[in-house]
Length: 106
Image (tube, rainbow, N blue to C red; front, side, top):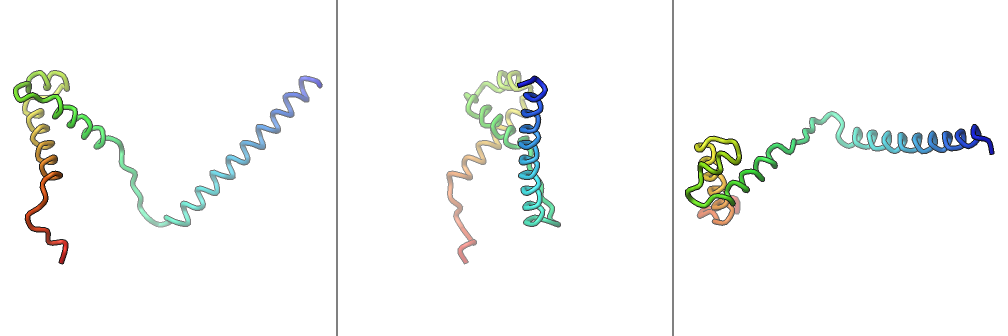
């Protein structure tokens, strides 16, 4: 088999695979447009998730008197560290403690 036939055979196989992939992508795009056409859909970034992860790391590293160390480690102000710790503490309390009056049962 000549080198030309060898490469042409693989080239045709490559073109066939690419055309099948494009067909699948086209089918997915058509399905999405049929299901969600004329709707605004937003995809959130991981920014909030990363902030929450950072906040939990700060809270876990907090020992009660190491605001300065944490502010240097996370490149934040001491006041910012205090706000993060307070925010995570309030969120954890809210998750653990049930509400006194639940008006959603009506």
